[in-house]
Image: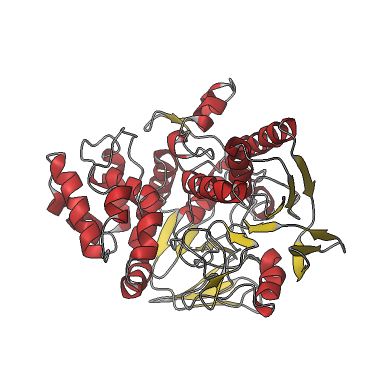
Length: 482
């Protein structure tokens, strides 16, 4: 069998590693990706050292069933000790170093596959279309035509949207990464406006600080909500909110998930109502006050937010497609900012930088933005409860869930036009929950599979490496049995 993998980011790495471990009958694999930094995806390409991985090593393994895979890789490198976050007691390397890990994992998987008799090749070109043969014939941007038996869309997330129509205006940056490039031309005393206040905005602030920026920085957003501060890792085990409990619940609801979470926290002898009150106050408490308080609670013995972050990563992908559509709409609408700030917390190292900038007055949080416009004379006018100006604007708002990456849009359009896939009303491609095959009028296409956030039944937050690894492992077994 010939498997075509469209995308060579973290999802593609996880799938190669899982196929190598599955031990199926050898065949052929062709990986397609037009990026100059294959195996790294958007987040982990070469960049400034200040742009750190935003999660501890124990939740960054791309190998399914082996949570210590990345930790072992780190332990073999003697030059990473300087990246230790003292509050967490963990090594948090620059993102480019995590990209090295993904690249090393991909090359090791390719070596293992070839040793087992597989033919593996990498085509450094985008797949822009397909036609039907015995299986899909993948069309590449350089005119290539590659017939495969099965094709996997493993394309990751799209790039940010230009919500204010600023593309082309001098001083506007729609895609901030790599920051080594996008920050290079910004004057040290310039007023930098950052659209958004999530992890990408925090990355920008940390990188500007590392470059010695002296000018004002403004986080411009609707809510001004900052990410939670990550707590020190504690080994916890879900005993009530478990995969088995999710699978065996008929008519799963959000209330049922809350009840299971209550049971988890109560079993630890801790106060669920106090925990719930903190979560519900996310968008009403002063962001600076919450940041200051959470920095003092990094080693807190209260495990509510630790358990919830674990549940979002482990249980979220299983529970999400089983919830009623009305509840999914509520969670990704009204509660998006709270869930996103919980599931993507900032590490204490960066949180301290943000707090210092806030306390010094260099960084301002500007919620309630209604309009951003380029000025004819240069710079930008921003409207919230007042009108003010900045010299440059960087877009730090991640794309909405299920956004098709621009490089993949021609292929997805071809799939839709050919009747090989269909869009879900909420966004993304409709897929079979068990085989990850695109559904067309309720019927799966047997030759295509979707891995990651392009699938409509994935959560509305970016899937983390262990989540991608688990999904890749299930898909690898499906492919090995085909």
